[in-house]
Length: 256
Image (cartoon, rainbow, N blue to C red; front, side):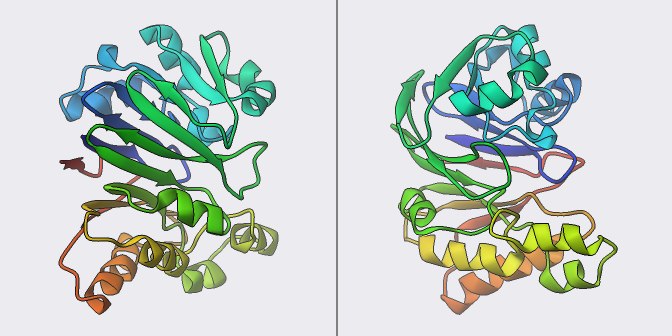
């Protein structure tokens, strides 16, 4: 199993996932060219990808989807509602549609897409299971619902949102309506909320956690790391490994 955040933030998001059965991207919010460059930087040939799974239709998650799918001749896996809302933006591609709440199989992995709260047409998180264990992915969520917590339990690796520091957001330059949107049930998790979610998901087999979708304006990587690391120290845990997402470069590789 291998995971790497190729990009994470308000300007583009993409995760590379490799199991013994397949290689996938979750979202492709960078340009196709930049995505392939970042894959190459971790030793991955883009031509070996099997597909692109999409969480929701915002531009920082789908900007490069269409170009990559056409260039690499791979399918785009997305919800039927997302396809209706953003199919014209993605453009010509092979689509494999799924429904939130209905697990499906793809290239040797089992994917369980579950609904999350965000201001998009049909946003989802993913629980992905293979012979090497389970991966949980949930970003762009205003609140961590009970369903989200249940779907993410027992994972070997997690990708969780640590979008903003509450004080930085309050004191920052964003207009009030945008601050309200970010804080809302359909916005983004703060560092403290991300840490609270992580606390619910800790278990002895959890080996890696990616802190993702950090705001460049309203967060600081050191603050996000401190929120998660402080939790682990309070729990007297020396693991899992923590990886802090970055907008401008690959933030590291988790292998297990």
